[in-house]
Each structure stands twice: as C-alpha cells, then as structure tokens.
Image (cartoon, rainbow, N blue to C red; front, side, top):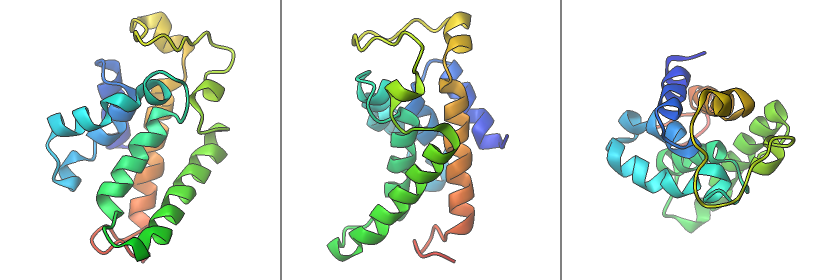
Length: 154
C-alpha cells in the first residue's frame, strides 16, 4: 500500500465518501484546495448520489484525470477518453466491475438517499475501503508512467 492509498482509506474512514477520498489525496499535485475538492466530488459517492451506478472511486479517478490531463481543446478529447478507458479497464480487471451495485453484489445496498451509518459492521461488510485504496494505487501507477506536466505518454 502506498502512502496516498493509506491516506485515502483514512479519509474514507473519517466519513468522506469514496469519490472524495480518491480525489482528496491528489489535491496538492493538482493545486486544488481540499475543501473545493471535497465539494466537487461530494455528489459522486455511492455510485453517484447513492444510485449505485459508476463506483465513486472510479469517478474520483476520472475527476483527477481531468484535472491533471484534461483539455479545453476539442481535438484532444480522444486522447483524454483513451486515458479514461484505460483507467476503467484496469479497475475492472482488478475488481470485476466499475459499477457500484455490482461491486456490492450480495450486500444489501439501498439507493435511499440517506447514507448508511459508518459502523465497524459497515466497514467489514463492504469492499469500499479497499476499492478506495485500489483506485488510488491504479492512478498512482498511471501517473508514474505518464507525464503529468505535458499530458503525453513518456
């Protein structure tokens, strides 16, 4: 486990959602203040507002990717979308899906908007904390192989 991965798990255990926990550990590199990052990523927990769609950890990776490698030039969208597809593929390869409800299969997971209480049982039953750590590790590996400053593959 990397330092950032462990920090992301700590953020999750302290009450931040999965998406916030991933984006939050990259604030310094992004030049993004923590509070803004937490606000931006807050709707994406629980598979986008607890709808159990795309896993919040994956959304957190995607937001971080956009902030690091994003573009305002429409001719560069294909390169950005390729990055997103590569990250999604790696996450799916390691975890079986990028869809929250599939990752929580076999675990009662309501889409009711009120978040579940964070208890020891909650952490033991759900894979979320491990998925947070895994998403950060996948992204760290990705940026170690790709230039952050230029957005070009090394």
